[in-house]
Length: 159
Image 1 (cartoon, rainbow, N blue to C red):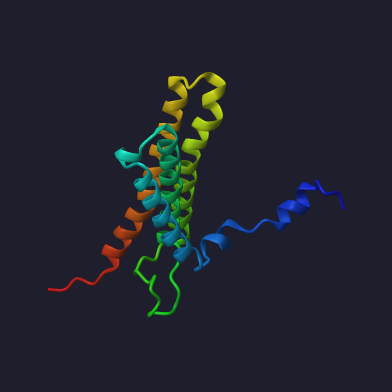
Image 2 (cartoon, rainbow, N blue to C red):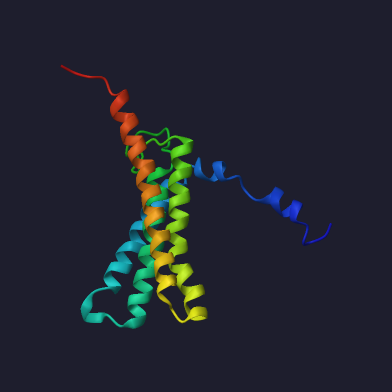
């Protein structure tokens, strides 16, 4: 077997739906995402702010928010006494939309880090990164708004 056999490597990769359907993603996403955003916010405090702390703060937030969103989108366990049971139950398609948006938000600072030094941090790099972040945020919100709409429509009307 050739170690660079693409077919063999592709067979070993997990299925995206299997990853998104895993209930272990919820506590990892919620706790990990919240911790990264909190740490990023603390690094952004003006009294300790420097250039590098601002860069690290921004990266932590741009990774923490999508991770938190994936945690919210993950399916809940069947155990009602679980600490992470929130009543949020997205469909597989809605989870995919949230995952795609999360990936775009994560690629936003990566775009600046990779393309910025090459082109001298031109305005086009910042605009591309901003467009990725905005499109990703819209997709994340779309997934949760679709779930909210479905939940409201399916809820019984009480008079």
